[in-house]
Length: 162
Image (cartoon, rainbow, N blue to C red; front, side):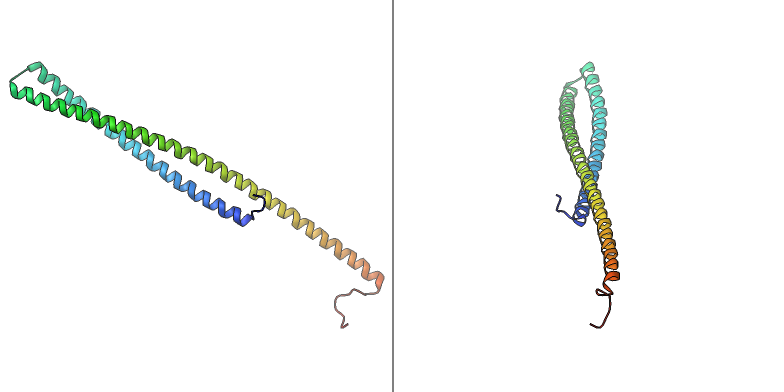
């Protein structure tokens, strides 16, 4: 926006920077969540491996009916763990997807911040040019006024009683 003052641009820049910081915090939290989910998946894998070995051992022995019932219970536990593992994998995928979205949003906001910084620099350079032109015009006016006073005998002077 060419009409936006540097103060407005600075305010927008501060807002975008705070949003970017919040996005970075969200991204970091999402990454921590992914780590926690991965650790949970590893734990579940260990439990699954342990239960699988129990199931295999019980299948090999084929003991009494109680063992057969226990085997079914363990298989049910394994199936439950497999379901939980799949759910954890889906949660991880969702967190990864959200993380990717947040990273893209952060990149977009970073680009916007860069654009605003550039616009602010352009505005400040223009302001500096205008100030230089104003000083130059003022100096020219003073020079012209001084030249005019010399020829007119002090007729446009700076402090007579009139």
